[in-house]
Length: 123
Image: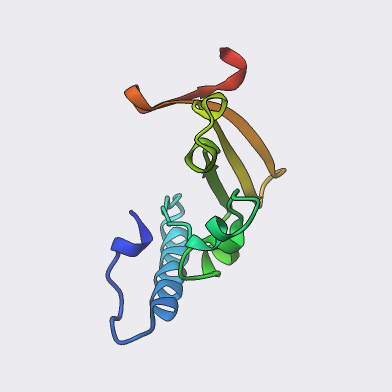
């Protein structure tokens, strides 16, 4: 699910609540020996930089995702910031953390009318 939609202890700060949820999901993953997929929003700090491409530090509400996750993928679509026609279908999925392998960027093509990504090399 999306991290911000999971209910935690509302008496805690957003940071503490999100950190606790991520820690509990990491424990559940180990206990059940199965993958957990967690979606998280990016905070708005990236929009204030010249380079708008989000990083691990831009994950919203907690650094615990970076610490506990085995793999972190971060999506980026330059068109959202440039509005240049040449960027309209460009997208990148960055493997920003990969405990079992290398980190790298995967260039993709984005087709909003059919909400589909495809490998940029296939076009």
